[in-house]
Image 1: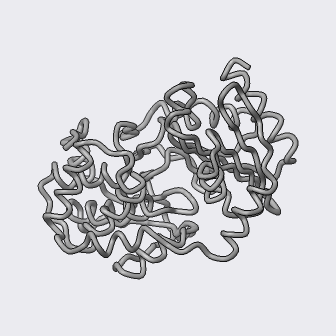
Image 2: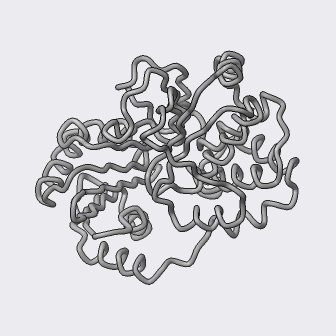
Image 3: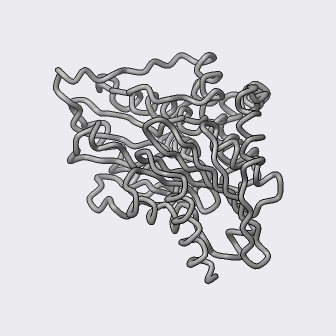
Length: 327
């Protein structure tokens, strides 16, 4: 089981904290994000039962909706007319909309994506890229604090771990130590969790993936196949589909009425052979160029900003990828 830096200080901070704390995650919250919210909320309450926790409800993925139907968990909106929280916890994300949530003096990030270098004065910095998921980090919190887990918490954390590891495609010995620990607390939850991590795609999602394939523009950089496409929704699913079709790198832009969303996926071989990190190398350049927010891993990343033209986005992305790969 992986260690957690400054863990005793972290426990002491939560135990002694007074006032309100705000817990947020990313939009289109997947099983890792929702599992982390559920697990960490219970963890805080074990340490500080009287602490008031504010949890605004994000947009939630279909799989996460299925999980929430099986566990007891309530979101708690923040009434802006009441005193605002004094600390903010970012779970499974390392960016937040400062126009919606004013700047906080006490910011804690618990995340496993490529670290965000723009935060220089975090109270606790748990941007732990060695972990396979944020739910794995939360599981280690329980283990090192020697806390018990009930079935709902164990199930939520296991769902996030299975989902973000792509059913253990990305795994190591420490990850399986976490899974073993969760199953010791909830021996019967594996079968139920596996059903939560799969779904039959909706008709509209299937159509989006087909349209992405039909509209895709192929770019050859040496031996690498890059597919660039656009849809109106389901951009992440469409990007994954293009990888299944044979792309080494897939970029799908979703053009919406008032925003632009970009989802990128790359194969492990592409990442290891080129050294290109989508979350670490491409997303910061998009933020510098267009504003907005984004983040991700080496092989998977997302970006959201104001409405842009498809040509501006595609020209810039192709330009920076060619430069990064020396073409």
